[in-house]
Length: 199
Image 1: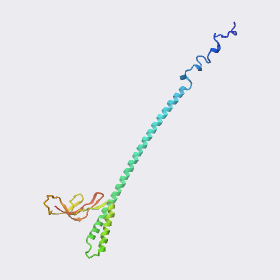
Image 2: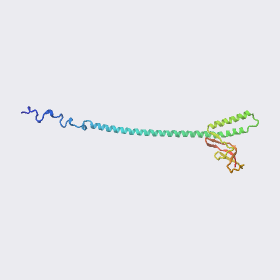
Image 3: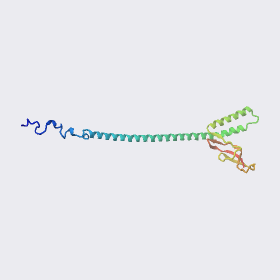
Image 4: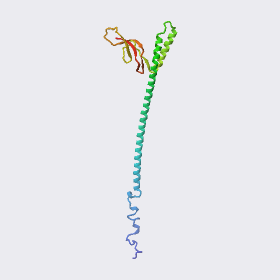
């Protein structure tokens, strides 16, 4: 039989039973060895790295924004405190300048002639009360001294007299007369009252 008549050819096996590409062809590759699998893994790794980098940048920006917000809040609070302190100092200075005017007004009110018209007396008293009320809105308060126990925080004793005493054994000095009224501004003594005490 010649080679042309041999159905198995020179290889000794039917040609139809030989797989396309042979053992080394495309059909013989495993799924892991398929073309493009390496490129996909590299792309996925790069994507994960980009995501991690972006998340890190996001966290840094968020921390920076929080620090800036805290700094701004502290700056705003400091400015408010400084402005309040400036207003308080300006108010205190103005009221200190007004104290002699109040003293003169008070003295004029107390020394009105006995025969002055009653409407004039009431008008002066009303004006003085209104003035104290307006200054009171700014925090100024007159020290109520007569009959109270001597307090060195708001009183300045310039005269002393023996106490009449009631036998109780309480020797605390008591204010009996005010020589010059004192004033307190927002809880702080602006000027102590000059007083005479007994005890």
